[in-house]
Amino acid sequence: MALNPQGVDELQEHVKKLLELWMRIKLVFNKAFGEEAITREHEATYLQLKSEISRIYRIISDKLAAGLKFDGDKMLEMLKNAMTMEHLHVQAPGERQVLYRLWHVIYIRLTRTLGALEVMQSGYYPHLHRERLKKAVTVAAKGPSRK
Image 1 (cartoon, rainbow, N blue to C red):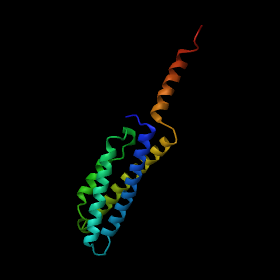
Image 2 (tube, rainbow, N blue to C red; image 1 turned 180 degrees about the vertical axis):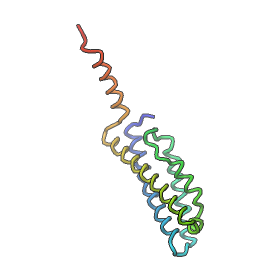
Image 3 (cartoon, rainbow, N blue to C red; image 1 turned 90 degrees about the horizontal axis):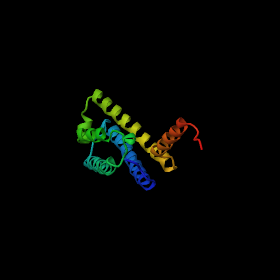
Image 4 (cartoon, rainbow, N blue to C red; image 1 turned 180 degrees about the horizontal axis):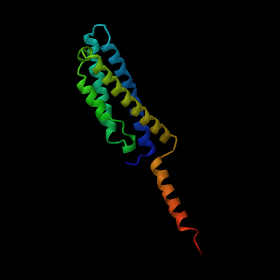
């Protein structure tokens, strides 16, 4: 799907917000894996956070071009499996490490997506440049035109 400048601006704002929320998920993990008791307020905040991530992902998932995808489905699956902070609190250390690794992989891909959108905001649209390059190569391959 080819993006226009307005679409890129909108996507960039949503991805930026999603990244901020994803960073908060890491804080939730840190809290849940710690020794402090988990309160109802913590659980409520976590559930709101999961809902907001899901809502934003639904908005952008169909609008992202293939090269801008960031494993959002894995993100939602991970949050679905991490039902509550209490559930996270009782996870074995090995399972915690798996969650941290997956969080990090998604974080890297999400920041890559945000970076690509920021480059596109500056006026560089890879799909347009590829088309221009193909045309230039085709013209060059035909050689100079004779009149």
